[in-house]
Length: 623
Image (cartoon, helix red, strand yellow):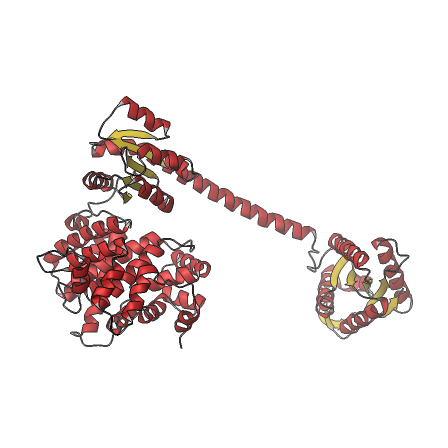
């Protein structure tokens, strides 16, 4: 069993259908279920019902339009309705999430365009029903959504790593971090949801560098090519203006593999993009308004280099005027525009996508323009948005009410493209200032982080002996004070060792100070490696070392002291150009009831060290 299959069995964090979609999936598992029963369940969800009817009309080759849900369900079939309910349920539930580097809005915009391209290709390559191909494209990348949902922190790190160097394999990065990848996980999830193998197989292979090992005229090979072509068009739809001509040329080359001639490519893409805009408005998914394909090929669609791309919500209950304003906004620009048809929808959308600009009609249903403006200004996020109110009338009373509600501007409903661009110039400047401020903040954060690191290094250097890397005398005394306080509170014993390298002056005089420094480093290494885990080894000056032994009585401290002495006596130390033996003398002392402070404790250990020296060195003496 793969890791993805294990994850499916045990994880409740993966994307899964709910509500009506879940009821439809459960209903379809019954052997005797009828299409009428499914239609009655779907009918309880008006949004799903309208989407199924629209999809039935979009993909239908029959001139008479579908007007009832019952007819849409019959025409699409049980399997297709189940899959569509699943896809739309996931879209509604997972519009946002906690994975910081995963762009949920771009994911669904890309997936929607991919699904619509697959649906349109059904008319060119007759391998499956148009609605089945739509859901195949919509869920082609669902593994990415699953990883972002189940592993938000880990997948955020993977995405950052990939964005820093796109020459790396995304699949390899995912497997290294998560033991699975979005292709494997997506395939397992779709199999679990009952999507036929004829689709899950090509979905597993379409991103491979090499085509699958199957005949050129096979159904699977055609689906792989269709998925690749759909993915390429989705990339084109979300690309910036500079990259579009190159992607368009590559798309034409790919399309010829499916017998779509270059002179047919433009009309095909333009039709799919129109549907993408319509479905984006229906599903509340941001889409980019592209120029005609002929202009994309010529590269004439670059935005004004002086304009900063804005996220803009257009709220207007009149579909015609809403689309007109949206068209004016995206004309020769890279703005991303989100539609709303009432005040409550605009408020919810604004809190979700945090636009730079909101253009709202004065007479919106639900919340009117001034009420929407006032509601937004009550939030911290809303105070940063540029709000422009529009009206078919231009009265003094309306103007006063708009500015009292906190609007930044007011414009007539019949505004021209130039007039709209002029009114957005303030928002452009504000966004540019915000971007500059964010860059300054990022620089300040970077400087603060570097200062913090430098301060930590300085603090560490102030407490570290540069020669040996051990804590220095200042750090040793701080540690001893802490151990002393802890011993007093817990009424536990405390011992210290003061260690001196025997005949160190002779080494310095004979071999030089560089050799002496090397000897001290080797002595420090032996002491560090041989000391007990809880003891602190410090250098307190010259050839003297201090070892703090918490919760250790005098007799118990003598044993590790003897181990240290023996370890160094048996260690071959490099001295000058040769090797030799270096010994140490150790004085051990323990705190008792009459010991007033840490200085007295160290003095007792010093006295014991003096005794060891007087007794012939290379030995231990306890106070």
